[in-house]
Image (cartoon, rainbow over all chains, first blue to last red):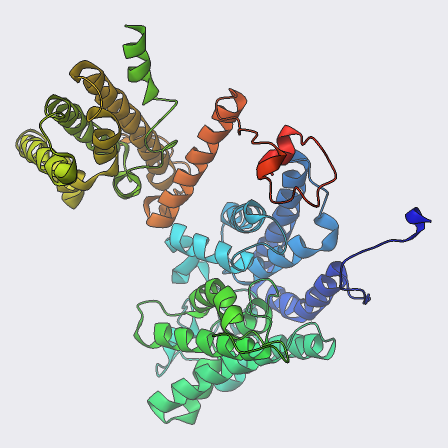
Length: 316
Length: 228
């Protein structure tokens, strides 16, 4: 009798959501942007994305083998991290740099802090920043970026990001920014396809729209307040890594707050820091740094926005 | 004599000031961007450590207990000034690369800690040996860390090109995040070494002091459970 009664702690309600199911949804949502990035930037972009994904899987696999831990490759989280990292890199990134990025993401940021669910910042963002600081020539010089294939033959100025081109002759039009006919990291160019992936994730209830909407909204409002120019506002919202970061990286469960109010604070904070770095910083893009800074604040935001249990006396 | 030898070697491995006692972290992280800086900083601190340990040990019966910290700092500051002038005169390039961290040896935790923990309680000879051992341990750690960071971040060791022509160095190792990373790795490595040698076994206090004693069914815990 004693053995047939199982006493377990809450929660007792089971849901069919699994880690691998959620990760698979994220991968599905990223496929359009990935395929599009490979089409417009060609074979070198494909090599970078494949290197990131494969090396992320290999590092995760080896870590579990060497430390005799249960194998966690099957939950697809390493694939998502590798894919996101690849989409954040310039199309001509040297492949060994991409592999070092996967090492930083999987081993340093994720596994050394305890594995999935314990990483203190988003692994892909952390790795991107490590690479950005370590290999400035490979990561941020115009030479590592490509113009989309359809534009070849047209005399254009090659630049790391359209963010630096605003107001100049070579600046892409709003339409080409929205559909992604401009240079940039492999997966960040097409706001339209990223938005499509984001809507899929919201409909599948994988992500909550509060963070992306408040993040992008804050950047839009701030840009408008400082320019009073709707054209400039749209230009800065659609260019750079804002959509990729806001939809796919800032919404990471582990490193974003759990309460709705907390998510709002998180999104607005990300938007403010992004705007401040873009406007006054000496870097062209601030999405990665804004997300990593807010990632670190997420536990504090959670603590301050925690809902009080009903009926308990107020804390003195 | 055997005891003196133990005092000397204590600081190099068993109680390595940076890796085992985690003292003097600030200069460790700040100056180890190159092996040369690490060795310069280490030797300067060693010189101060030996002299201040000797002086404080000699004066340990004269210094009143209530004002011992200001007295220690004054003595240390005197020796730091001497060392600073010597470095400025004979190794100006090291003085330039160490910058503010050379005068900051005055408030280096290792030196103050050894004065407080050792020199103020022991005779002169053991105090000098303790200062020498701790200084050598500090110098070795700083040099090792400087070599690793210089190799990975600049592709050179002691200014000699090793891998810079073949592999693009990772600049991050010369910056603060890389310093923290290398420092963490070295502390982890020294912990693993100490564990393997069985030097730092956790003391088993028994079930009386355990907060889980009332719910725990076992009468005897294994060593690994105690650590967890």
